[in-house]
Image (tube, rainbow, N blue to C red; front, side):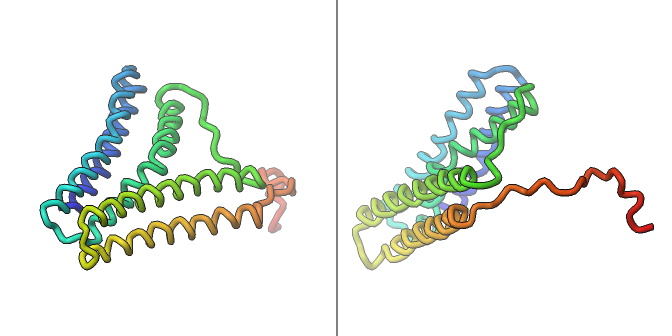
Length: 193
């Protein structure tokens, strides 16, 4: 049941996002679009309550409950950034706004950007850990909560791997390409003759 609910929440996230952006930019109803976008956190509340009720009704804590906690954590850590990114692109494509500025590609500016994204992953791991710990206390049976404890380590393992990737941008910052030969295609007709 929980896996189906996670899938429904993910589908609902994208449906609400598409409906909200369509209302804002295609139908020229920005308030209705904003209202739809603000409904997205309700999906996570529904998932949280359903997971708690499932555990309360005696369900054996398993990987589905851990996955629900990680999903909620990811949404808290990265959901706002995802919605903001998509809103910027929808405003450009559908609303005539200027093209959104992408993340920096090189140097320390890129490293700072990667660090900010990693902070979202840290937030996700922290939220998932809190939810998993609450579930462990709620079940209050060490023999039944082993899988939930394993999901805490999974959350922090993901955050650690992402942290190493972000750190790599600080240690080995990507250099901007040097201004090289003209690659516009002018003068290429002589090559190979």
